[in-house]
Amino acid sequence: MKKNTPHLFFLILVLAVTAAFFGLILDFMLAVFWAIVLAILFHSTYRYIGIKLKGRKNLAAGLTLLSILLVVIIPLTVLAITLVNETIQVYQQIQDGDLNVQDRINNLQEQLPVVEGYLERFGIDPVKLRESIGETIASVTQNLAGQAINITQNVFGFIVQFFIMLYILFFFLRDGRRLIHQLVWVLPLGDENERKLLARFASVARATVKGSLIVALVQGTIGGVLFWAVGIPAAVLWGFIMTILSLLPVGSGVIWLPAAIIMFSQGEIGRGITILIVGALVIGLVDNLLRPRLVGSDTKMPDYLILLSTLGGLSWFGLSGFALGPIIAAFFVTCWAMLGEEFR
Image (cartoon, rainbow, N blue to C red):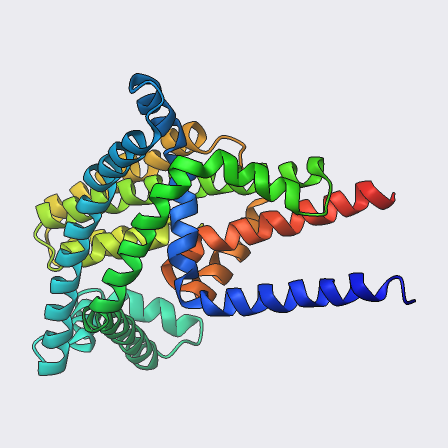
């Protein structure tokens, strides 16, 4: 017992200091996470630039960081500013009574009286249904606008997180390979298991961000441009909502299909046909064409697990959860598979 006491004390000390350290940087963990993800995604770019610069790591990391800013971050920032402005306008219209969702639903029902007959056959009260739908849509719209307003109010904290992420990303690009070797050397799981876990993290991060996010952004962008082209208000907001829904198995069709039905009900046959054609033949096919090429079989998880982990991640971590959720689920599956191999 006496021989093991120093080792036990040292282990407790290490765990306590580690817990204190993570508590210390807890508010910046998302910045660290996205720095890791971007370092994984742009590692090949960094290596290519490094070869061209004959091994000058600092310059290669700086140029890679600049390319990330130009290609990814600046366009997303411009889009985010436009989205915030548009959602604030919608929120203000709802608050002032200029945009009454309930009245629009009532008008739609008056133009489609046959729907009420079908609902009554199934014992559904059309009045209560209209009120429920109106309240839900208004609540969702207000929540989205409220989140956008919260972002503007917390803009200083976001800027701090953003620059911390860029700062950490520079070192992860430059020293990433060395940090991985050190991590493998320190962890007491066995080098093979540690490399398997790290490879799993990298593959799921690439598949989730490079695949799912790009596909969702393409679908949301096409949907937003489509709504703008046919004259639907708040096209950027609807494009953002379609992007979020495209990350989930429900897809963006729950937005553009009702929009087409509304157009038909209002006598806008040409606009309704345009939404249906673009929605079915362009937005619908983007997933089938791009996802297999961008994602492939990197996640190697069943669809139901991806759905649950994505929803749980969004609930826990906000928008960052679409990547964090599947990564945690992949770790869960991999750890249990390793446990089965170890003790079978």
